[in-house]
Each structure stands twice: as structure tokens, then as C-alpha cells.
Image (cartoon, rainbow, N blue to C red; front, side, top):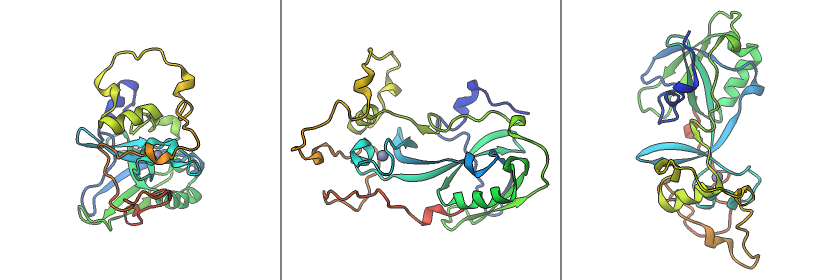
Length: 250
Ligand SMILES: [Zn+2]
């Protein structure tokens, strides 16, 4: 059994997608185990998509849905928040842990499976793609195979997607990215000067006087594609709840 260790973490999607699960063509199939016991183990992530060196990367959104937009520099710059599931799979054939990038509506699919197969990991599934390459209406069917007594303990360890597949950046790092189009640490590996953690707290050192319009802090992402709409500088929380139904097919 292929073990997944810290030395191999770079293969795990952190460097641009080596560890992503995909079925490329119509009727392609793969046998996998969803690496969860129950629906409670499955988490969604609110992320932004940015482009770094021509590669699309996900970056963790810094705010909860009920926090103001200015708590996250990317939100303040009107980069769209995307609700994502990064479904952790064990690919039975290649004996590798992979991550399946899905829209949030895949939650209901997994919820249905969890209700029938408990623990979920003990039932392998055949996944079949229905849809030609590039077809946005592509769906995936799951067919349960025989349940056995495999548990999560029998499978390779799962790395946290936050910090690997999803870049986990601070408020200051995101501001630097918006100004420069890259993350500072990607260029310089030297140790940063000692920082006061209090000042690193998001927004704590940059509160502006109440009579100053917060709009002045809005920026346009240097590399992230800005949404075409919502150009008017209204104070409406644009983009917060906007989701695209079409990309959430499963
Ligand atoms: Zn955000």
C-alpha cells in the first residue's frame, strides 16, 4: 500500500495539481473510497481563485460569511468567493490519496451516500463520468461495490487541504499579493524579521477613522480575474452570495 508522507506532500496538489482526481473523457471510470466516516467529517471551504505564474490557485478567504468584506483583502478587492468541496479520495488502482475538486452542491450527493453507507470509507465506489471533455453539463454517477472492513486507519494519512491545495495566507500577505501579483515568500525564503503578533492580527492595526470612507482601501487584484459586473463602486456587498449554478454539477 502506498503511504503518503511529508516528503511527498509536494505531489499532493500543492504545486499545481499533481494530486487532483479527474476523469477526463466520457464513460471513464475509477474505483475509489471516499475517505470519510460520516457527513460530519466533510468540510467545505470558501476560497478565492487567483493566478500565480500562469497557474490557477485557490486561496483561503479570510472572513466568515457574516463578517464585513473588508476583513478579507481579496473580498474587498471584489474577487469572487467560491464555495468548494475538496473531496479526499483513495484511488484504489493507483493506491494514492487524491483530491476531487467539487462545487458545494456535491455536499448533498455525499450526504445521500453517507446516509446509506456507514462508515462511508468501508464501501468502495465506482465513479463514472457522463459527458465529453469540456462539456459543462458533465455529471458523475457513483456505483457502490461490496462493503468490506477497511477503515481510515488502513489507508494513507490525509494531509490538510488548507495550506497545501488551498493557500493559507495572512491579511498582510494578501495585501502584498494584490499590490504585486505574487506572494513575497515565493521569491524570498529568508526568515522575516521578528513581528509583533498583535499587529499581524487581521485589521487590528489598520482600523481607519470612522469618518474615512472604507472604499479607499478597495483594490483591484493584480492577478485575479475581476468579475465583469459590479463595476459601480456601490457599498453593496457584491459577490458575497453570488454562486454559479452551472459549475456545481456532479
Ligand atoms: Zn475573501
